[in-house]
Image (cartoon, rainbow, N blue to C red; front, side, top):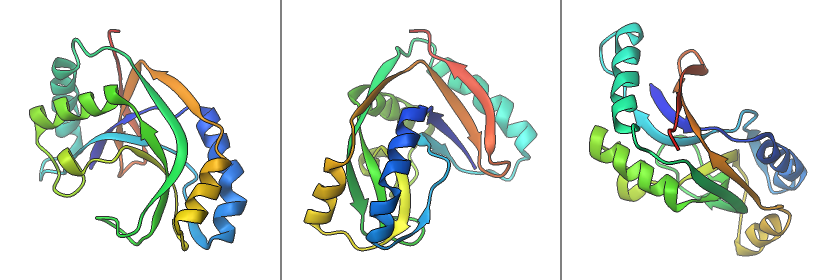
Length: 174
């Protein structure tokens, strides 16, 4: 599967690392070492990746042709108690970004939505880990530890989940 991701700056990864002891204390057992922000997923077809990637890259270039840069902000921790995929709960940094939501909607219009994850179900986030127990007080305590981070997205990456690496980069025209 390929996905289109917004880069996550090192300051966000450092924030995630600073939360690790508190998350472990809450019972998180599986931590995310690489932090990403998925803008849109593209489901696998029966075609080979070397065929799919060039087509996807060209379609994305067309859709993103006049896409402006946009800001993203993380400032609090939240949780998916019952995530649509994989074991829960999933604890994450919540993303605030009208520009990201607009881009996601544009990509869903062009490529379709993956049921339960995208369209109306899309919740932009940076995953911190899985497991644990979180009530409102625990989330408030974790959120109070977050130093807000804001950054401008001027490039997106097509990520290849099989190879576990970026397969292409696309600059936003501004």
